[in-house]
Length: 249
Image 1 (tube, rainbow, N blue to C red):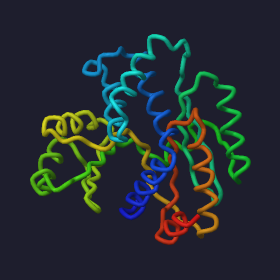
Image 2: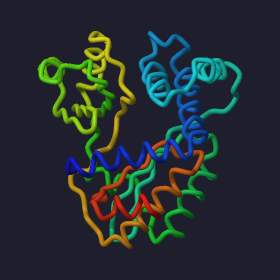
Image 3: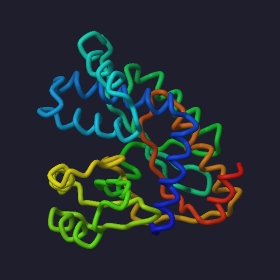
Image 4: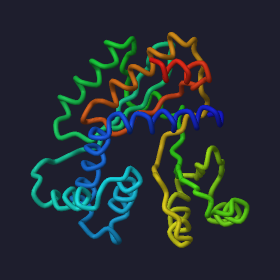
């Protein structure tokens, strides 16, 4: 992905978070509850829960809401499973969907419907995996307290592959196996991230004409609106023209 594409995607997601905060909180709460149910309610001993709580704090979720989501693990009888879907959107754009669901039939029907109604088609699992790499992605809001040169040396030594800064935001990318060590280094340095996630990063991106690209983004947004969908990844290049069109769409 180009640097512009990455930063534009973050900006787009932050805008979506502002517009749909209750939906974002619902997905974060589900991940917290599932993490606590699978690995226990001790945040320090449960790495998945610790990560979920960190991301919730990055979205300004209150401690009370986080605690309720953790406590819900003991009372929620639902058995959630993680399922993924792979398909193509308009213009042949690859789309990878991660879900947490307690009703697989409902989720399959909903995801398939979104693809078919928005000019895409659902493929078989494993058909697109080679187009994406699993990477750790950290986003930090630098208010000026971080000496970037010194910080870059520290974080690369911990295993970071890439560090970029844009408008006071720092993005760190790591290999999958170095995600934990970089997370620990940030903790040791006393630096809180807005988000730290394992993401599927496309090996290459594809630019489309703005009209077709907007169709892809409408499909992505439709999928993201689904309560069972946790993350949607794609290999569409977010060009300046598309970014402008999305801001006015």
